[in-house]
Image 1 (cartoon, rainbow, N blue to C red):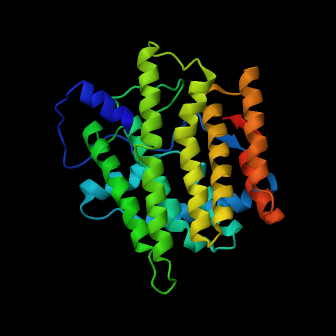
Image 2: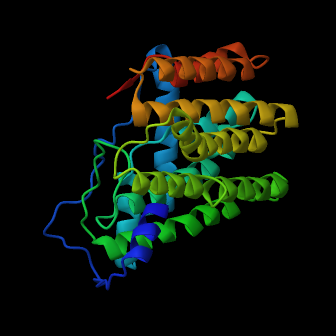
Length: 310
């Protein structure tokens, strides 16, 4: 998102807004994003079921309907964004503290929408990415439509959360708290700040990869780290976790998100990076102590074992 605004504000562009997408071109598909391949071994069915439930929820929430000029690109761009582990962590955290999966699906879907909006903005043909070897979605609708639909995803995610307010469950306070958590994590105190900082560093280094490990760690903390911390905390909040459980899972999400961000940007070939990742991984493991061991294994095996590039 910050990349789109940064570029557009620096280079005013007159855009043409078509009423319908160019149907002569193929629809956007999930394309390689250099994500982490997470080997889930015996717990694969657990994570697959979570991601399937989130995708089903999103498809039902954003069907292709009138006006097609809005809902068709929103549906396709939402599902075109590569799968992110934060929404699944939200659901897993809810279940870890004793909650039911249904309590977290709206929040997990909202998190995906926030991420998809950021991903859509980042991949506008008007912007440059500071991450090397990064693929883009197919631009069927044009940069103007993609920019506006990306903007529309954000309030729609909050709408999904508002709809999750159920008087029968007396969960209004939890839903409101989660809305604050998500807006804070994805806004100027979190992802947008991290993206802006990354763009600033890129402009100062002649479009070369960030060279300083501390700067990379800072960017990863504000982007992937804050998003995963928010996801884990939101799941624990909605699942009825104690304040101690919420904060432990928040820290766990922060550590895991930082690891994934660093692996995405610089990999694990550098000795200093390996040492830092191992240090962060150990901190993450400590935060899961005291929870149900079987559920902890299901979570930790996905986020901490066999991390590699696709």
